[in-house]
Image (cartoon, rainbow, N blue to C red; front, side, top):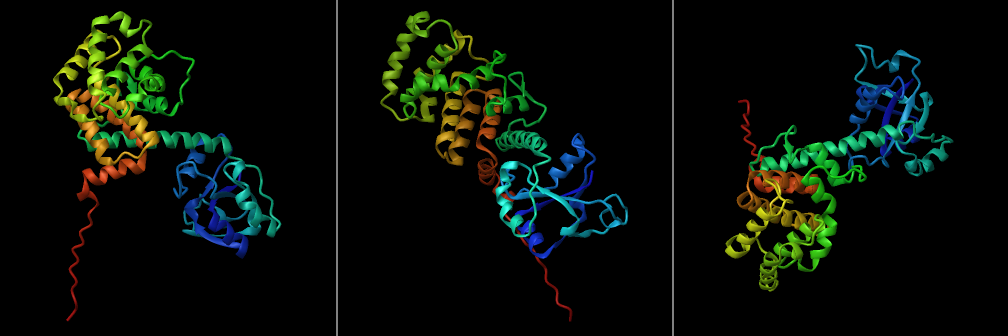
Length: 354
């Protein structure tokens, strides 16, 4: 195979206009064949992150003829920069065929054909890996910011960080029955949210959402199985339906006591998933999807779970929320929690020669 160089849209236009372009030799990669995954990954990793991970519309690949020492990337004394001549480019192609339109206008002006992508499948696979890495980093960073154990090798409810990311992005085989409680909750979230959504902004959501979750994932209706408990739930629901949703329910002894009793009676809770955790998972997931919760709201919710449900619940929910939030919003929380990290103090001692 020949050599490959990724050009940004601006570089492409410059090359089309001038017929040559100067670039760093380190950006030029030799790829032996399409099964050379290491070289292809190294090539992709060298591309500047100008937009969202996987965004390819702004890039085009130049395949350069390898017929002289000028482009010998293996040569020890190679130059740090190379001049790429348009005449030495064998072909141009985008990472994805759908991006060809962004370059076709300039190509037509100088009578150049844009070829079909050579790396589309590899680019899609690489993007998928990078998104998973980024999601994992976000979850781990949020754990760290809230002083929770943060380790990429940790298992939460018997699931690895990568498996949790796959569940949250829908990258799972839905034909396979859930094996862990976390998987059950994430998969059935929409169903038990829909039943209780009328209460979403009311304190009664603490009751209705948990019971909806239990009914969704049980073969027997909660009210039929537990008539006495159901009557208490109805009374509490009526009482708290008049109140706006609040974390101050920690002071409501009757409500907290009931949820603790429910946790002990049901088999759909464990040390990672208490009734309180399920409610805040539902609320935060929904708010992240359809609203713009402030960083302070996210922090308060997660600290509430840490205080009320314990470290394991907090660790899992915090990782999940970090994945759902994405890099920009996790960084916003980072700037609030660790402001000193981003304050630049310049102590410059200027001395003037006498």
